[in-house]
Length: 316
Image (cartoon, rainbow, N blue to C red):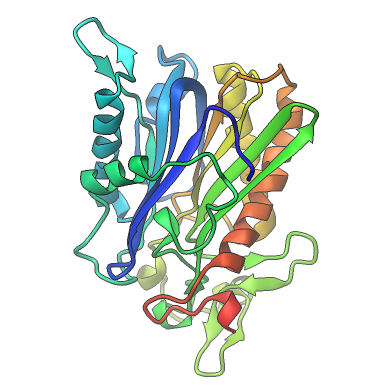
C-alpha cells in the first residue's frame, strides 16, 4: 500500500450509466493550488485557491464525470465533511472547501444519469489511504474515453490512473488522473500510441496529429473530453508554490497525450500539500509531478476495462 499521509481517496460509480466521481479528502486541511489549461473547463471553487485569495487550505478535491452536472456531487462531499465538523470556521458554521472539476462522459452509457450529491457522499464513505488501488475504470474515470478525432466509434477506453513515489527520503508525491482526452495517449519515451483513435472496422491507430490536417469535416462531434487530476504531496509548500506545482504537472500531460490542452479539453490539475513532511524545493516537487502525471496517464489506459462498447487497451 502506498499513501500520502493526511489524504484519503474514495470512488463511487454507476457502471451501467457509465459515470462516477473520485474524492480526495484532507480532513486536517491541505494547501491547494490549481492550473487550468484546456479550452472547455467545468470547474468549481478554482478562483478561491489561486494566489491573492483568502483561502489557504481546502478539505477535499472532487473529480467527477457528468460534465457540469457532475459538479453537484461536491455538495455531497460538503455534507459528509460538515457532519464531521470539518470546514472553515465562519463563526456560525464550518464551511468545507471543496474545489472540483468535471469531465464529459455523457456519450458513454446513459447521458441522463450523472454524479449526484449522494454519489459524492458515497465516495467519501469509501475513502481509504491506498492510492495504488485507484486505477482503472472507476470513479471519475468510469465513463472516460480517449482518441476522439474520428468520432465515438473509433474511441478507446480511458480511466483513472494513480501513482505514488518517495522522490527523496521523507518526501512523497502522488498523482491521480482521470484520462478522457481528445488526443491519443502515447508512451512518454518512445511516442508510440498506446490508446487512441482507431480506424474502424480495421481497428488500426490513425494518429490524431496526422488526421487533423486532412479532416474533411469539423470537430463538432468530438468536442467533449477533458483530463482532470490531483498532484498530492506531504511536503511543506506555500499556496503560491502549490499553484506552480499544478502548473508544472501539466508538462506530464504534454508528454503522454498528443495533442494535449486543446479547445475540446478542459484539462485541469489541482495540487495538494498536506505540509506534514519536510520542506521541499518546489522545483523538485513540480519536476516529479510532471513525471508522475505522465506515468499516471499511461496507467489509466493500461488498467481501464472495456465498457459500453468502448474497447480498452488490455482487450486489443
